[in-house]
Amino acid sequence: MDVGIVGGTGPAGRALAARLASVGLEVAVGSRSATRAQEIVEEILKKWPDRTLPLTPAANAEAAGAPLVVLATPWDAAADTAAGLRAELGGKVVVSMGNALAKIDGELRAVVPPSGSVAAGVQAVLPDALVSAAFHHLPARALGDLTQPASGDVLICTDHPEAFEATAALIRRVPDLRAFDAGSLAAAGPVEAFTAVLLGLNGRYKGRATIHLTGIDGDIPR
Ligand SMILES: NC(=O)c1ccc[n+]([C@@H]2O[C@H](COP(=O)([O-])OP(=O)(O)OC[C@H]3O[C@@H](n4cnc5c(N)ncnc54)[C@H](OP(=O)(O)O)[C@@H]3O)[C@@H](O)[C@H]2O)c1
Image (tube, rainbow, N blue to C red):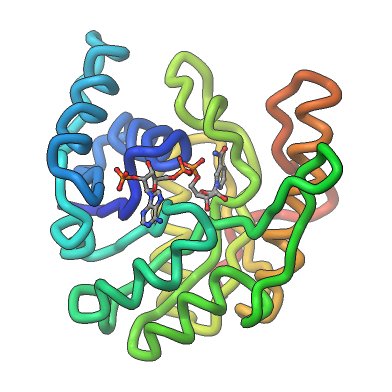
């Protein structure tokens, strides 16, 4: 197993699982329910019958046993879920993709979690883990559409060089995705919050916009 996705049964986790599996990575799709994990993996495989996708259904604790783990639960469940998996996640690279958003007056707005970001909240409950924040700006619909390249620039925030390298290496496995060092975990708040702007744009323009940086070359090791 290469990657475990905790909460992998939602749109974001499914899309990431399918995309990573499409480039040959072995992915455990984690859930609180073994039955649901099984159903979702079958659903993904049925959707892409001509692809060989190395996906395995798993309980969240099993998914958390993978060498690199992505947290894809709702943002407000990320820290509690991570805390419940402390034994499995200690010492590992844990990628937080949660965006702290709330629907207010009919639009999704960024909210600031007590730790400043979802990722910082995860790092606070997992002091021994190497937490990074990434994948916030990739819409699940585009990421999971294997008929199209998953083009986009992925901003990575972390306090750990090893976590940056492991997260960037994962991103680089997907053609057309670029990985960027967006700074320490202190930068994760604004990175997560910008997703509210992107979602608003995608709603108003009926799009699948993500971010592409210009005037900068990607993939410079930290
Ligand atoms: N959707 C996107 O386009 C997108 C893009 C980038 C980032 N994100 C971020 O990625 C994360 C997941 O997004 P999503 O749309 O896939 O979310 P979601 O469907 O609401 O939740 C994902 C999975 O988390 C599990 N879950 C639900 N409530 C939980 C709880 N209280 N405790 C633990 N697990 C729970 C569920 O799996 P089980 O019931 O099977 O356990 C669910 O299928 C979010 O934080 C979001 O901000 C989303």
